[in-house]
Image 1 (cartoon, rainbow, N blue to C red):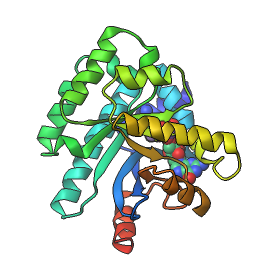
Image 2 (image 1 turned 60 degrees about the horizontal axis):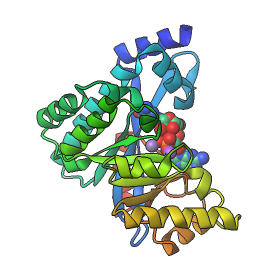
Image 3 (image 1 turned 180 degrees about the vertical axis):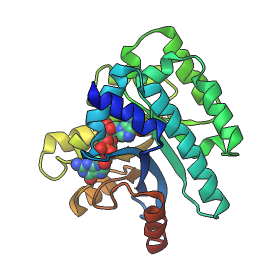
Length: 254
Ligand code: G
Ligand code: G
Ligand code: MN
Ligand code: NA
């Protein structure tokens, strides 16, 4: 309860930060885009992991304001990169299933894209299968309305939740993210590798972009490339970085 009050205060004081993790195409190692990841450094407790404060924000209802802050900050950052002539590809933002219960989410996204003159195709929204668990028709309609804006929709942590296949066909998903629990087994476990290969094929046969998460070794990168997974992100390539550090990283990785 105390931590959620501190989080509320951090949001009010603009003390949250977004860091951006590069996603590289396996075919040529060039930038596909970046994923925006939330960071919170508490003045006395230090850095607090999103695994800890996101569930707290979801329970306390603060998640809506946090998601809105992430969308606004991302649109502002995309505008700054565009103004500086930096080609960043697509920028992905994580939203919780609660956001899709609100029918005004598509209007909010449309207003932010418009205010910052951001082309909709530069923005991707990452959702998890929990959106499907929430089987109110309003949720599905909201997801469809977001997609209708021209924004990309990505299924995060694919393969770890429930009803994986039905969520891919019932929602207008354009991108699939292979969870790092699969990636970590590549080169170690044949079954996990077969499962990863199957996921890549499913994504491709549905016309989706497939991105692997949590790539930490050269071996994982080469296996993903051989399996024709289109893009990957992970500590091997780069952690999530503050915008200025990402710009420096990009200058070093043409
Ligand atoms: O960045 P890190 O690996 O610590 O993120 C851990 C978890 O927190 C991941 O599941 C990630 O999706 C989630 N997360 C990170 N940033 C955000 C965000 O802005 N919104 C939501 N809802 N989840 C986030
Ligand atoms: O849930 P989501 O996939 O959105 O979260 C991505 C999380 O994974 C972020 O918290 C990010 O910091 C973390 N992450 C990014 N790259 C790696 C990696 O190579 N290994 C591990 N273990 N975590 C990673
Ligand atoms: Mn994600
Ligand atoms: Na994930």
